[in-house]
Image (tube, rainbow, N blue to C red; front, side, top):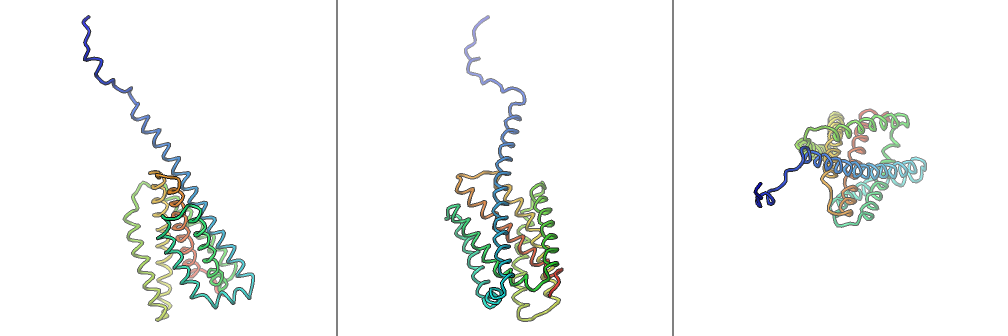
Length: 247
């Protein structure tokens, strides 16, 4: 049989199923990477909640500290806003440890004002609302992380809702309407419930896509923790306004 040199240059076909196996292996690797990233996100979020809880408990347990913090509520709230917006803006410039430290500082600072707020409600109602919030948060985070539906559009709509709530809250500060306060609380609880699912999906997808460096991964883990921490805390506070029993 004659030798055909052109046969040497023809590419060999890949075995049947080789491409699919490669895609499956890549998907498994990226999924594992996403799970690891989300574990970091929820780990830091839990650390932030623990810091807030510890400081709130300290405020509630010390009448002198409670009175002091109560007198500084407005400056503390302004400081919280400065810290959280500053952290969000400068996070990409920080090291992972600096970002984590700033996040925990903000969480502790938030615990001061939360202690004053919680002092207005009975301990039993605070505990009940906390567990309801935790269950709702867990359910919505699971839905967001597992649904195949793209929640990007919903996130944009919900962020507009957050802005509307802020404006309505400023207006109601001067008006003092009970009906408007109730409406703000209902909408706030619903909006941050939806944002929990949106943020869980958003950061899971970021983890699946991967990061260029370990530093970037650490920075984004703190950003995810901050977003989900804010979702949880705001959901809890709005639900407390709706269902908490005042002293």
